[in-house]
Picture 1 (cartoon, rainbow, N blue to C red):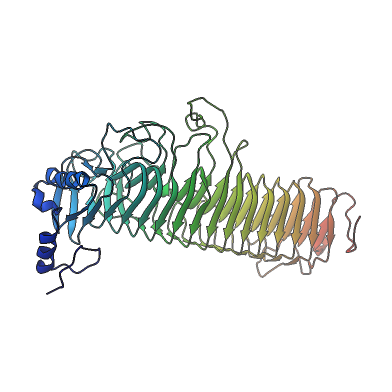
Picture 2 (cartoon, one colour; picture 1 turned 45 degrees about the horizontal axis):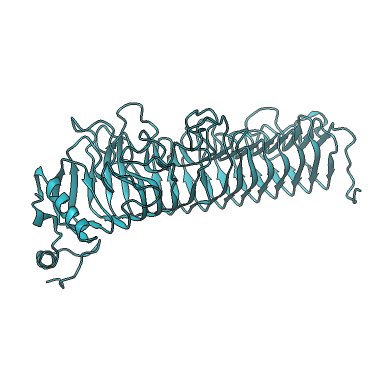
Length: 538
């Protein structure tokens, strides 16, 4: 017989002898409080009695033995409580409401002073979103105004409308080893996140309790989780995996870490980092998702999100900063949006962005591998980007951006684009067989294009180039690049084409080969008085 233990841990073998030993030691086994484990009668009153007893003691572990427990009311969990569903335990929702909430509806603990230091772990949390009477929007686990929250090693299945886990106004929260399988849209909820990171903005944003003091989330870790479909008839995969969709000017969610998760078949964005700062998105896998990672400042056209903490309209967005998207793998991206998109506004810029060491294999519907718009101080480096329906890397309205050492293979449009961007570099990239031009720079000023290799541009018949510079740019330096026509039947017009511009400095480029332009020349420079010397210019 298994050795008796003082407390059960997830993954521990469960025998009749061990269960009885724990039952004798624990006064907080829910079945001791009348919770029925047969799935035939409402178990919520008995479970709540055990949670209340733990509260009255100042905190304890509440154990749920194997079995099926109908949950006919919202459960309330309090500070210093560890709620453990053992292997084989299922909470089966049987009420059109949230499954569990940290505290009472009338409480008014502001900031992070609510019921805290809570662990919720184990079991199947079955939301039954296709069951008659349970199809309206509901939450599974809802946490607000709290600190030191751990949610781990559980499955949330077939949720309708809202979120699997909402961390609202929470600091020091961990969600690990969880499964989010199956979603039902009851109508108008095609944007819901399995894990929602939110702030205490209003009762419409967080309905559990106030106060609505705009407390954001900080120091949140989401790791080792899976997001996808359940296979239950009438359900889909989640619209979004991890993210947010509300904001307040003057507040940010900070230090959000999304590490080592898997996202499969997500309909929109697997990760939607809306108004986040100091955020790391590292080592995740994305398969067949509408879009993998979205980084977004406050949406300028959203009248509610652009209000300040006093409810006054500002008519403006705000900057967000310090984001790293590193070492992720993305396969067979859908056509909802670009695989990685960072999108600012005229009144809000994404600052200090690293997109490094990611592998992107496939997008559809003309979506790019990486898209940056109104981002400053960004590095996009050492990524492998293959088989995109749109450009490999697309950038616009940039400044102080470095695109370095990327490998881009058979993009469906250009290899790299940089449009209306300043003080930026395109360095040492390797681009093979783009459908259009290898590198396209339009407008902008003070851009370096150096040491890139482009082979086989114009793979799909069009008037494209190895490197194309146009739309009157200023002070563009082009040096040490190598372009080749490649094996495609539709050769590029030129290896290097400069249709306009002033202050162009070019030298040391190798554009040998048979090109399709008149005379077959590899270089065509129509800029004003280009400097082609390799000497210092002062």
